[in-house]
Length: 402
Ligand code: SF4
Ligand code: SF4
Image (cartoon, rainbow, N blue to C red; front, side, top):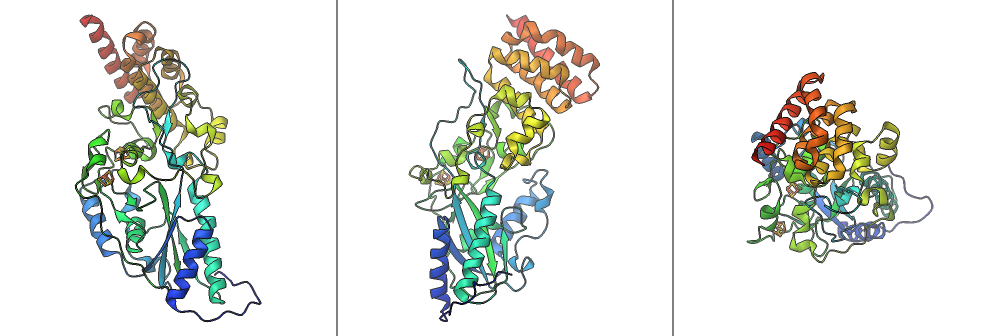
């Protein structure tokens, strides 16, 4: 329940006038767009989701299986869905497919949205203030529920119905004039506000994102197969990354921006974030891969505190760093990878370190053969023994071909 500030007399307003004032209040809070939609079930979005789930494109994300199409399940008294967008920095730095081949440091790439403070926290605070603004404008208590990503709601479908942007072939929501480097949020309120009109798709014949995706994860217009998507593989996937996809991940250690970086709608996007908290942190702009591989518990906690990286465990980040170091093909990665193979407490990391040593190839052979043989014959985990055996095979086959 959001209460109005006491004292002020409020003149009754039409739903249209109220919508205009709430939009202005949202923009004053830093939202780059604010739109309004009727609270009805999001049938079209539900159909798309069902078809996607039926094909298994959600991989292991079973939390997506429950109902997400009816906003009233979240607040039965809701009358309007307010959709908002926050912008995160969209600087167009070149994202390397491989880590630097020469000169220190060997760095990884974190998706742009995750380089600042966790946007969930920023969004929640701003949505609460927007709900307060609605209560003040109405001069009465307002029932409201804010939703950010984790709530069971089809937020892209909601944003599109509220006219924020259109459904793009990359499965992102694109806001003309702003682009897609935005986070979406929703506020359900028990007040009538005039709805905006949905926006027709504008991708036209463009297919840049489909062609640029490093792993071929955009399997059709608007359809991402999470099983191939680097965002899923580096963030959600708890176990081993499929071997055939590891070389395609490049230096990315948390998420991927390729399908957005190539989009013409982002070419003129402003780089100014909606809130100072969303600005890049130096520690996440280009994290050192060897430090990530060797991250201890205390340093892990310090690195991820207050950021979206909290979603990944320490071993997942180290696994991702091992893959990126393998993809660097850089001799400086050999000693840290040998150390990880021999002594990391996580079998997931030891196994990926074995793969990375083989990926580095010639430069790794002299130092890696003995620890790989030891891991193949003695490691406690079958996954590590298998990876070590495969790595030895690759290194010795390459040796024979010389
Ligand atoms: S995030 Fe990366 S891997 Fe996933 S669909 Fe986009 S370009 Fe492909
Ligand atoms: S790259 Fe082209 S097809 Fe992909 S989302 Fe952007 S405009 Fe649409």
